[in-house]
Amino acid sequence: MKYNFDELTDRRHTGSYKWDSAVGEDVLPMWVADMDFQTVPVIIEALQKRVAHGIFGYTKVPDTYYEAIIRWFSRQHGWSIDHEWIQYTIGVVPALSAIIKAMTCPGDKVVVQTPVYNCFFSSIRNNGCEIVTSPLLREGDTYRVDYADLEEKVSDPKVKLFLLCNPHNPAGRVWTPEELRCMGEICFRHDVFVVADEIHCELVMPGYVYTPFASLGEKFLQHSATCISPSKAFNLAGLQIANIVLWSEELRKKVDRAININEVCDVNPFGVAALIAAYSEEGAEWLKQLNAYIAGNYQYMQHFCNERLPQFPLIKLEGTYLAWMDCSVLALNAEEIETQLLDEEKLWLNAGTMYGEAGEGFMRWNLACPRSRVEEGLRRFSCFVEKKLKKN
Image (cartoon, rainbow, N blue to C red; front, side, top):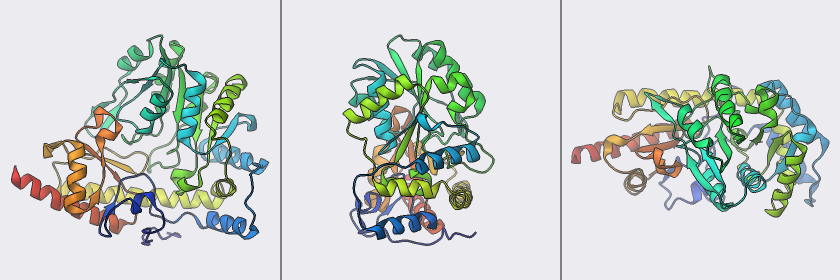
């Protein structure tokens, strides 16, 4: 590989939420979804150039920003986006919140497929709406959509939006075009608008292909909003940059108003420079190698679990860098596992219940780190399991 993903970068004492939230130098954090890899060199060079200018005033987003997005999604994903469809903001969660504010009234209902990204819940609640869950169905080492349940839920006249996670966090699914069409058609039949969180769209394992929901046809484009950002794939979350792709001019005006009401309308110069650099040929090559490395981490974890932790099944990882492990054999709830792992083995994972009741018994692992940290995390987890199962 051209890029060294095995390099260990010490992130402690850098203001890292992931690492500096841990009490103690011996804690291994494999929880919150940011990566322990340095970003692609072309981004670092672009930021160094911007810093050298020395003035960091209010930012006017240039045409080259929009051109970079349009070119990237056309080349990488076969999706043609028009300049005027793009609205920038500071993050995908603020984007989701603004869309909900623009398209609902307090008391309306919003459907999500659980287990799902925890901020879906807070964004819905913060806008005075009611959460409606349509649990995914587990089948062996994967999940599928419960179409009958989804149709039943969205048929409620009070349901206005369906929040789609594509690829799905934490279930690891990269939805196929057929699955996306089925979900879309169900929503369209009941006049429910689709909001697609596609922040993980670049993080797809070999053999799988991400399909933008809005790329499936005119109806899908016109009845959806898509939230995208380079932050997950290029490890840029701290630079706070994201975009909403929305076809309807009328709805764009409503969302723009909501973005301004929420005061998340101004982005910083570093986020703009980083996005333009990320969506480049070098960014594409780095991303290809990154995904291959993460796939290797997951394969290592699979082998380890098969050999030493056969009672802890892994859900197949098609996309994202977040492994979803069934820990129900421990007869502890997910929050107890998280707390005891941290106390006893200094390993920090996410409790599955962060992602809804459907996550009970599961733990989420962040595999976007050097292989040696995956190995150490699994060693610590194995020690923890050995002690717990002996007690039983």
